[in-house]
Image (cartoon, rainbow, N blue to C red; front, top):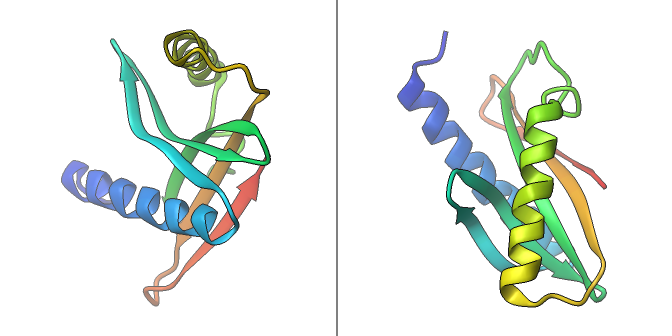
Length: 117
């Protein structure tokens, strides 16, 4: 079982991998780990005139829970609240979409990235 410190390190590594993945696909970084009080958005990206609120999920193989299922109702509600604060604070007048990037770390040191929009 992975320690708490190991999970935090793995999470940061997953966020960096997700960021590089999105940048390679033409996204532009607007914010990283944006916070409003207790709410946080991992990545806020822009592409094609749309703002992407990105939740990054890092898992080690074998993952018991699917990345989409791991974003529960409370997390989805918090992402929506955070996005609303961000849009109001930055006076965003663009379409906002929610995405998930899953980074699955494999035993051999490689990883798989999946993008859900």
